[in-house]
Length: 122
Image 1 (cartoon, rainbow, N blue to C red):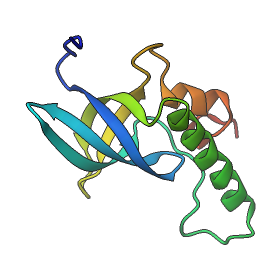
Image 2 (spheres, helix red, strand yellow):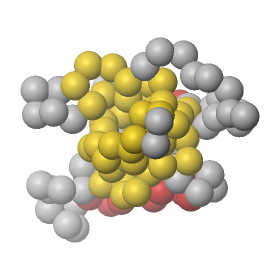
Image 3 (cartoon, one colour):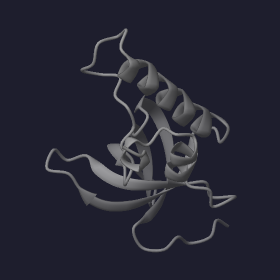
């Protein structure tokens, strides 16, 4: 039997990586109820791939961040734990994404890989 998760933590499967810090997730609410949500990674600001010129440095960095996030989910078959926080005004949930087996957080992986603009100097 799967262990019970703390309040505001849910098992989820990533169905689509939008960009480095935004994902579509099927969140298991329990009792056979699954909710598809768009979620944004909390405390991470990855470079953009939408709304920027395709040949620009920002776009290339955004593609790198998207690839890093897709690889993180891919090595786990999309499965993760999400710890939810307040939704944005637009209804996008702010989440922490965690590997259930190792406890490794996707935000830490992106930050260590240089894909978090909020943590870069200057």
